Each structure stands twice: as structure tokens, then as C-alpha cells.
Length: 348
Image (cartoon, rainbow, N blue to C red):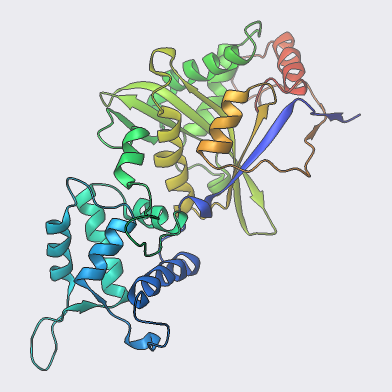
């Protein structure tokens, strides 16, 4: 009989709200609408679209209203970027004083280089902030670099990458720590966990897009202090994958430093865009308000109101045995973990 998983909250994240794929129709159209809003500002709406060009003064205003200006990307640097991207008239060889939409995008890419952040981050800050021309700065977007500094993205001592076989022992240790954090009485077979984790550390496995994977955060480039586990699930209606976040843990001495945010943004989400993953999903115990707030408020995950998670135990969940492998699973451990899953204690 299926059991209702009433003690968990499911959260899903539509990646288009974070990192629209570069060059996608939606993101290009949104950026074009922003371009047109600024070019037409103060000029009326009868200006033919095909002749719309942006001058240096308007580009300066755009950068201020979009929250891009800071101590590094100042007005002088913006002027230099704009001048660099203006084209020459093929007949007179004189520099134009305006840029078209392509020049606008190229200028923003140069701004991203100066700010030392991915262009995709700049683009989505602009579209998510719904940037529009302001009068007296009354509706300006929040300064981008201050947001990133708040979340320890700029000048962070931590680096994020996909885990590999060399990280096996570290990831296993963090995975077990995560499980014990959910249920301190859990009886864990470390050999079984090691076998399970190793399947997610094969970078080019036979499962292709459905290959499990882990992302890790490290300090000083070699000490791994955080990890996220991903289990892909095929969506046949969309023709792409959903990534289920199965585990996420940061060592206690490094918690409260926004490392989870960094692993999700710079590891999981950037790769998900490249691989055309449409959605991130996870289950969170309903009593974990801190984690629910993190994903719902800080990461903008949605909580579906019309879904009920249901599970049914069909076996003891013993690990797959390979020929010549004498490792066995602790049946008591399997029963304990199954019970924990039904209670919504362990993410699944």
C-alpha cells in the first residue's frame, strides 16, 4: 500500500528564472525589450524600431539604472567600453556615436569582463530586475556587485566544481554526515555508501544524461568542505531531464558562509543550463523552516500546491552486487533507511 509522504515539502526551481540559456529566444527577446525601452525613453514610441540606436549617454543611464556601476565599472570605464564597441561607417571610416542591439549586448559582455563575473549573471540580473529607465534613480535595480558580495560570490575563497573519482572519500564522508544530520540514530554501512557514491563520480558514464553526479566546494583548492548530490530523471514530455537534489551538506565549521548558494549557482545551475536541464527539484522535511526559506526565498524555488509525494517500498533496497564482489549490505540498515524515507527524514 502506498504511503502518503505528508511530512515533506517539494520545491522545484525553473532554471529559466536564474540562467536562461545564452542566445535562447526568450532571453534575447527580453534583453531586446530592455534595449528598446531605454532607446525610446524621452523620444516617444513612434520611432521606427529598425533605426533604434543607443548613444553613450543612454548607455551610461542604463548601466546606472541596472545597478551595474560600482568602483570598478565606473563612468570612465563604461565610456571606454562604449567607444570600443562603436562601429565605423564603411564609407567615411568615421566612428559612429551609437550602437545597435548587437553592440549593446557586446558592451554588456565587456562590462561582465570588467566586473569579473559571467555575462549570464549580468544578463539575468537585468531581466530578473525588470530594468526600466528611472527618473532621478527612483526605480534603479539593486547594485549587482553588492548582491554578489553579500552572497560571497566575488572574492570568495571557495571554489566549486563537479566531483570526480579522486574525491570519493571526501564525498562519502560528507554524504554520511548529511544522513546523520537527518537521523542521528541511523545505522550506516560506509562500504555500501562508498559503492553508491562512486557511481556518481564517473564523468562520462554509460548512463549519459541520466548519470548521477556530485558537486563539491573546496577551500585552498584541495580541501573539500561541501557537496551536493544530483539524481537526474528523464522527462519524456519535455525531451530533457529534471535534476533531483538528493543531498546537500557543508562541514559545520564552514556553515553560514553561503557555500550552499555558491554550489547551486556556480556548479549545479551553470551545468544544468549547458545540458538543457529544465527543472531542479527536491524534497524537504516540513519542519525544516530554515532550508525551506533558503530554497523558496533565496533561491526562488516554487512549492507546488497540487502535488502529493507518494512512496512504496518494493524491496529492501540492497545494493547491486557485481561478480567477484563479496561486499554485502546490512539488512537492518536497509530497513532503517527505508523507514526514514517513509517518514520524510531523508531527501529522496
